[in-house]
Amino acid sequence: MTGRPPPDPVRVRETVQVAGGAGETPSSPVLSVAGETQSGRLSRRLLPWLLPVLLLLGWQFGSLAGWINTRILPSPWQVLTSVFRLSATGELWANLRVSCLRALAGFVIGGSIGLFLGFLTATSRWLETLLDSSLQMFRTIPHLALTPLVIIWFGIGEQAKVFLITCGVLFPIYLNTFHGIRSVDRHLINMAMVYGLNRYQLWRQVILPGALPSILIGVRFSLGVMWMTLIVAETIAASSGIGYMATSARELMQTDVMVLSILIYALLGKLADVFARGMERRWLKWKPDILRTTS
Amino acid sequence: MTASEGVEGVQTGLRPEKRVAGMRVEIHHLWKSYAGRAVLYDLDLTLAPGEFLAVVGRSGCGKSTLLRQLVGLEFPEQGEITCDGLPLTRLNPDTRVMFQEDRLLPWKSVRDNVGLGLTGDWRPVSLASLFDVGLMERAGDWPAVLSGGQKQRVALARALAHSPRLLLLDEPMGALDALTRIEMQRLIERLWLERGFTSLLVTHDVGEAVTLADRIILLEQGQVTRELKVDLPRPRVRGSSEFSRLEAEVLDWILSIYGGFI
Image 1: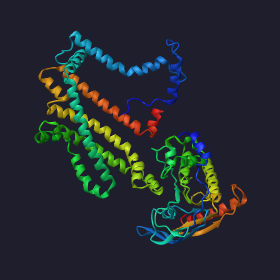
Image 2: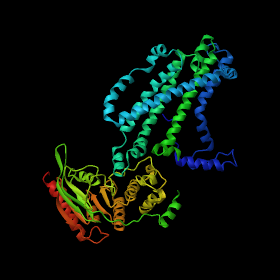
Image 3: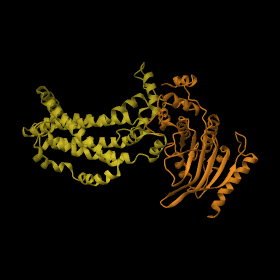
Image 4: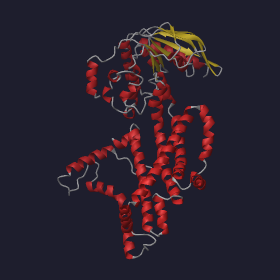
């Protein structure tokens, strides 16, 4: 899942020194102790961008040369101009805002319910027996299959989208919360009891932090589900939002707007991932694998 | 708080009174069984205040069960445990345990781990305790970056931060390498001598028992079957003839149990 391997701390320190020393003579490639030149490091940074940039240039060139029918696939430049056009009318921002609010509302509601149910079933055997098998049954329903029914229930209003996202987000968070709490090291709980921690302290200081890595995996997973559900729901039944923007653009054959919508979804997904990683770095900084990459 | 502030705190007397009155523990006719199988079998045992007692025995002889009763996490079916004459009916607040694993909370800094369960202004207490095990400069680190021996020293600091009057040591050196184990034994002995708490060590290592204990008992099928006083002067030197004689004797006990199986 991680994009690049964690940097070797020794090598990072050395190359930082090298970069500082090279400030006076920027043109001369200075050899670091690890045997890596400054230009080598730079190229390692830039290399991942090479392919996307080449693709983009090729795409633009192909469009200009007439090899690609711009009615079927617009050129990157056309997509860029559509950004300016749509943001000038305010259409882009309004739709973006609506989409984000829907996603957030569904995520908060579904996430809270999942977290709450996870806490309940993980802490009480009785509640687990009562609830878990039913929840597992609901979990097997693909939530997107509910879409036709949800449209009948709620129409194409906000509730429909929020409801679908809630359903999609709930279960990953529920499962991971349950699993996280149940897999907290019994030894640690036992130790904390011997050390006289009360129920609240035990929760706050041992069980919750112990379950957090698993809960955050659930959060990360459900963020993916959140965007996917939003796209489907907005494409099928909506009168606003990025998905609606794409659907209505299809009727007008505005391929540039359609491509733009796809790119916006990709960007939002990436943002959510960065957010989830940020939470992991902040709250799980005690974990050996995260310690290694940040120190 | 930085380490240097902590040093000042230690020097200006924020440090808790170190000397404690060791707890007197009496166990009378203790019975405990799990699923119908008796684990402790009419056990009688007395720990004098400030005594260092070592319990040896093969696995499954009831050592861990005994510790759980002494902490007050579980209660016996028959018989009773008294601490300074009072029957033990709840979690014993003056008792602390060191386990075989360090059981540090990985999401708390070393300092916060040592402060676990302390109330009031606990930070200076935590630092003072870390100072005693020689790890005050690691107060801000995560447990993940410490070595096994260091983690176990932090666990000792955590146990001692509460100024316990009874310290239960559940094979705390079982997982350490030989050199670290000797260091740890010396550290425990020094702190025990300084503070005077009562100590009960469960161990598989006969040499360790002879090094540390005032008295060694053999636990066999839930009962104390052998007992030996160790009167050697401290610090004890392994390899002296008296040390070796005692070590051989205790080893003999254990081997005689196994004898039936081999």
